[in-house]
Amino acid sequence: MTPTGSLLIATDLRKAYGPTTALDGAEFSIHPGEVVAVMGPSGSGKSTLLHCLAGIVPPDSGSIIYNGREMATMSDTERSALRRSEFGFVFQFGQLVPELTCVENVALPLRLNGTSRKEAEKTALGWMQRLEVDDLARKRPGEISGGQGQRVAVSRALVTSPRVLFADEPTGALDSLNGERVMELLTEAARSTNAAVVLVTHEARVAAYSDREIVVRDGKSRDMERVV
Amino acid sequence: MSIGHTLLGLLESGPRHGYDLKRAFDEKFGHDRPLHYGQVYSTMSRLLKNGLVEVDGIEAGGGPERKRYAITEAGITDVQRWLATPEKPEPYLQSTLYTKVVLALLTDRNAADILDSQRSEHLRMMRILTDRKRKGDLADQLICDHALFHLEADLRWLELTTARLGKLAEAVAK
Image 1 (tube, rainbow over the protein chains, first blue to last red):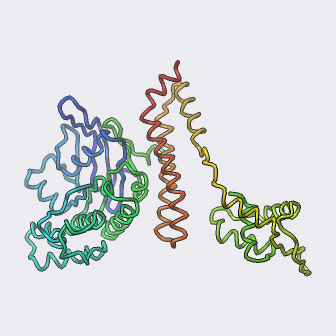
Image 2: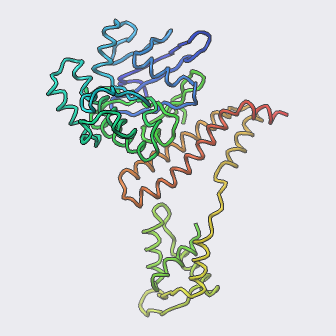
């Protein structure tokens, strides 16, 4: 896959935490509607790559272009707005606010963007239906299972119809049956909205839901489609 | 997979012609590899010789001879024994890959490349199976899951070997 027409392109990314090199010239590109798995052993730099791509952590050097714009030239406010409205996030653990009900959790990103409560919860319920957790709308995160919680988290990540969904080990805490269902629903939902998915995983069965994979090792990335 | 035992097992529900046996096998087990007629007839003549099946009738007609086969008592015992015996864990392709990796290290080639390409090839197959699973019924899902778990085991071996390439290079250099 060539970077031409890519939604998000990173070149020669370098990032060090003190004496530890996390990224050492990593490259990445993704098209709208594409699911790309980022694989590699623990400590290889794959989560750092995701954090840089999502504008959570600035790289020491290198370029990240989102939708034609260099992210380094954006202000913090612009990057935050981008993360709130154009990016969605799913992590392995602890993403839901325990005091809020599930539907309030899912509606939260819309509320933060200024959508009215009624409208936000209506959209939220729609996404919860797609992820098959709408019956849990009035429950709190403490009252539902891990697999259900992860589907609620995926609903929340998709509620703003993001153009890029960043998922870091989204099924890491689930058994295989629940993990696969989450992956099925997540990729289906993302494909139906033409969202790009950056999927960090060390599990092959999860990566099998992607269109292609890149491998990160010692801070360097390898696009397997260009190798094979 | 033992074709002989599978065909015998299919005969347990009642006598069938060779053609029916092939069709039943292909429908149930031969999605990727349908049987050749030759395979069916050579297997059946072996089973016949060993007393595991008998000819139940021959249909006359313009076409080739159409034998109808029935399973014998000895055949049923044989199927039962096969079903009750666990399969030997297969060495799969590790031995071949191991040979390639060691050869690459010995000849100063990039062993990690071999492992990366193999991972990619495995993932390609896993994507096909995952897709088939997503579109299939429960039987398809279970069959694909079995294949996926085996491929995943190979992949875990690939990851471990990749992580140990440095040590392996030292070991083969001795």
